[in-house]
Length: 279
Ligand code: SAM
Image 1: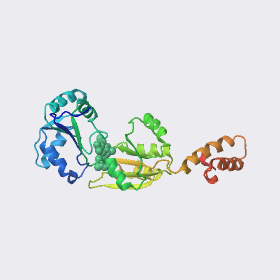
Image 2: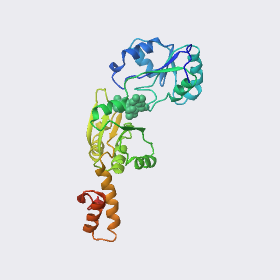
Image 3: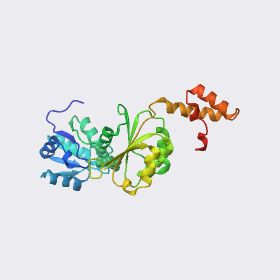
Image 4: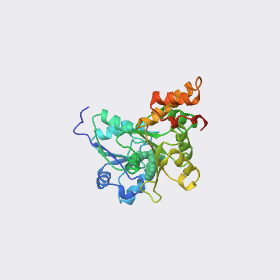
């Protein structure tokens, strides 16, 4: 759809994920200049605006009312007013509300323009030292343990680096589930409280990270991004296939012969096949 020239603009504005110094000058000017700001939690955004001396009117737009208020907001935009959309922290629409409003505005031919800025998983990726060319952003895993494990089972052979969001009360369980689903040796990074006072970026295997967080209550406080390296190099995939074959051949052959054949057929190191079923 082409944009209507008499319409206002919907500015999608990223806000800080902790450090208020990360609000960009352009974000500030945009928030100052619009007729109103659509905010997930108006009290939180009011605090941000007060810090910068702004008193732009606020409108509540959250997951429970977005479908209802989107049409009214689009009418205002079509009437020539410009609006901003913010979430509580970071980039709107990234595990945050806004997609319905943006879709409705675009469908109505209203210009939608980003003011980019902080985003927790991008910030984590930038300091993780994990492969970053291709990334699969998974956001929050299901809260229920059964659904979470099912989701992780589907992701275990994903070759891209995986990014998850997690809160303090589930981080220990999620790390344990990740370790069980992807194997204790898989490299990962846990980024906590980025840009804030207690910013911590831990790297290690999933086994090490799960143990560290389970044993240290301080490491369970705050907000988290978990990044997990994908099955990038095919050694890991070969080992999985080698072990499957070794177990099958082992039903008919002595372990040493089964391991030799499975290693030859899959290219997995023979040592990685022995005794894994006891672990
Ligand atoms: N829209 C946001 C963004 O652009 O990243 C994400 C919103 S989501 C509702 C909130 C989650 O993002 C938190 O539970 C946490 O997983 C992650 N997060 C937000 N701020 C963070 C920070 N400072 N450090 C680490 N993770 C953070």
